[in-house]
Structures are given as structure tokens and as C-alpha cells.
Image 1 (spheres, rainbow, N blue to C red):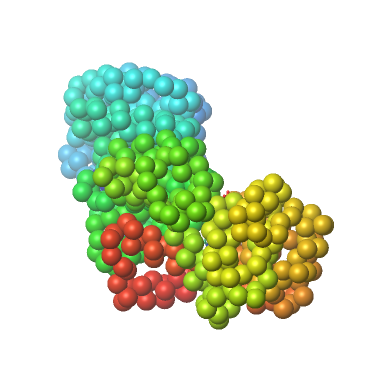
Image 2: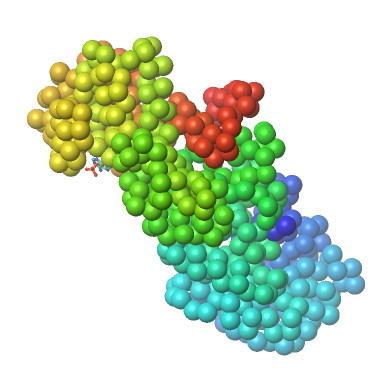
Length: 506
Ligand code: NAP
């Protein structure tokens, strides 16, 4: 099993120890980043392994490799030698590992390390992410055969992650650490075992002074949410793809269920710059199911071999899973939305209801289809007016732009107002798409966004006295249906009620 290594980047030995002790139960090893220590603290770090009581990696990372050491190589070698000096016959009191960059060739340092049982991690950092023969490089770095080879490569695109994954899988070197740096490579850290990596590096991100490397996960989140130590080669992989994919409750929902059910499965975020490239990688990773979110619900359609009638009707897909080795698409937003709305307004249908739908993207298409099916009449308003027009024409709805004229038309469609754009969502503009509209206080108002809990749009509706609902109930309802698609069975009732209680407390 891959090991969880906590990266310690505080300025003092004491503070690093404090952080280590706080997160000790989640980790297997720690990395002391001596380059982050204050200069006077660098005199005393040799005693750290004894104080830590777990295997520790000694690392002094140069600024050119993304670290904080700005001195010359002579000074760095001296510091490394200080860490390896006064070696104890009891190897637990020495650094268990020393990180030596591939281009730092000081045989005496390596010899000193080996003599007292300190393993060498030979590392290579590529912050530019330019293509090169990764497998050949890994092989060339294992000079004596006993080193661990560490490759940290910036993943600027999803195809970069795929390239690194393929190189790692094809490489015969077993003792290796593979890191895809950056937000687009975040899942490679959770799926370290699948990426052929023996360690993953995490950070205590909630500690103020922690400087996590780009894409590094929080140590507690990795251990508790993703149950990192339980991920083996056999663990089934599920996940969610989108971009930037910063506000989603789905990993919490699915991983909580897997945990409660004791299912050997993990659900991870797959931020991607191209949904097609992500699906290619997902196939190689044997991903068993994907939720698809903004902005890929439409872009994913050409990548599907087959899809349900509802996906064809709304031309949006939020659920993908393999059937006979090909991607099949489903849309669970549709009924997730209508079940949630009908429950909210306490009705069985939308007959005689005049409704405004704000937005004309993937979610709006699901909303419009359901409003029509349930007998409602609607006005669709969108920033890009022609998209509102083309969606409205399918159902003979009215349409308009998000301008004064369009907003004036709401007066005839104000029983229910449904906000489906990404405006107000975490990571997007914190604005109100209907800031020109004055709520009367009688409208039932729903926003599909659930992070944040209350968008500026919902806040303004609530302030006017409207009954409001955010997208949390909808996302849970649609996720329950995704679970059926992924697992071929319903979520057991007792598990679902536990999740609901957890959700309310969140
Ligand atoms: P999408 O297909 O990318 O559509 C985005 C929509 O937002 C389009 O109408 C777009 O207008 C509009 N928009 C984006 N930025 C805008 C801006 N700055 N000003 C004005 N309009 C803007 O996304 P989607 O899949 O429909 O998702 C939309 C939202 O619904 C997201 O926040 C998502 O989280 C939420 N959602 C929630 C659930 C749930 O279960 N609760 C389910 C699905 C979706 P243009 O056409 O002019 O670009």
C-alpha cells in the first residue's frame, strides 16, 4: 500500500513537531523540509527523527525545484551532511530517507547515508512539464538499484497526467514516487497506489503557516474523506469531472456511503481541461462511473457510445459509466430537480404555474424539460439570448436576455423563479443574475447552486420575504440516482438516513 507522508514546512522544529503530533494518526512517514526552517533552527534539525518517533525524510529543496533554499550547493551539501552526521547504531534515531536531487552528485553523502541505513530518494522536479521520456529517466536515476526514484512533474493538462500515468505503468522500476503537480493532477495523489507510487505527499493545510505544494491534499482529508490507506489496486474508482471543480459535495456524499457500507471503492475529483482526454485516462484507470459537471455536460455527448432518451432530449449528460467497455450517458439532474422542486412547493405537478428559468445551459435544459413535462409555462432568460431562444422554442416557452426588457417579462412568470446559471457559485462571480428584478415576496425561489449555501440571488429573494430553496436537496436526490447507475442497486435506507443527518450537521 502507498504511504501517506506529511510534508512539514513550518519555520521551527517545535512547530513541526506540534503539527506532526496533531496529525500523527493519519500518516506513515513525515518529510522535514529543512529549507523552510528559520536559519538558526537549521542548526538543530539532526535530532528531529528521534523526536518524531516515525520514519522521517530529510529534504532541503532548492528554489529552482520549487523549494525555499536559496544558498549555494556547497552550503546545501553541508546541511545535508549535518543531517546524516552523528549516525546512531539504532537506525530509528537517524533520518530514514534523504532526498537527493538527480543532479546532485556527491558520492560521500550517499555512502554516509547507506552506511547507517538511510535510504536514498533520488528526485527529479520538472516544473515546466515539457514532454520527455519519463520511463527512461526513471530507469537512469536508479544508479545503484537501491534508491527510491521520485519524479515530480507539473501536469498542465489532463493529457500530461495521462502521459505520466502511462509512463509509470510501463516502467519496471518498483520503488518510485510519482507526483503530478498542480490542480489537474490532484487525483494522482489520492490514487498513488494506482499510479504506481509508493508514497504520496500531503500537507496540514488547515495550519496557517503550511505551504502545500501545488495540488497537495490536506492530510486529514486524504485519510478520512478518501480513506487513503484502504486504497489498493483492487479498489473501484468513481469520481466527478468538471473545471475548475472547486465546489462539489459529491466526494463527501459518495465516500461517506462507501465508508458506511464498507464498500471497497473511492470517489475522487477529476478536474480536467478536456473531458475527452479525461475519459481516455478514466478508461485506462478502469474508472467505474463519473459524475459530469460544469462545463462538460454538453461537451461530453460526442464522447458517449450510447445514452438514455433523457440525455438525448435535454442534450446534457451528468452521469457516465462503462457498459461493455464503452461510455454510456445518463442524466440524473432531471428527476433530481423535479423531485426537489415539487417537494419544496408541495405540489404533484406544475399545472397553472408561470415560471421563470434563469440560464440556458445544461442544467437549464433539464429544468425546462421537467417544467414542460409537469405542465408548467415558462420564460427563459439567459446572458446569451439566442441560447434562451433555442431552448424556449422546443417547448413553446417565452424567452429573453438578462437585460431590462427580459427582466420586465418576469412579472408574468413569477409563481416560481429558478436560477440555473453558475453565477454565485464558489469559484465564480459572486453576483446576482437578477439584480435588476425586485422580488415581491410571493415568488417561490430556487437556486440550483448549493455552494455557497445562500447565493446573492437567494439572499435577495429571502430578504424580500420569498420562500427559498438552494440546490442541496437536488444534488442529493440526483446523486442517489447516480449511485443506482454506478452500483446497480439503491442506497440502503439506513445508510441514506445516516448521510442525511451528517449533511444537516455539515
Ligand atoms: P453550463 O452548461 O456551463 O451553463 C452555465 C449557464 O450559466 C449558462 O446559462 C451561462 O450563460 C450562464 N453563465 C455562466 N457565467 C455567467 C455570467 N458571468 N453571467 C451570466 N450568465 C452566466 O452549466 P450547468 O451545467 O448548466 O450548471 C449551472 C449551475 O447549476 C452550476 O452552478 C451548477 O453547480 C448548478 N447545478 C446544480 C445541480 C444540483 O444538483 N444542485 C445540478 C446541476 C447543475 P451563457 O449561455 O450566456 O454562457
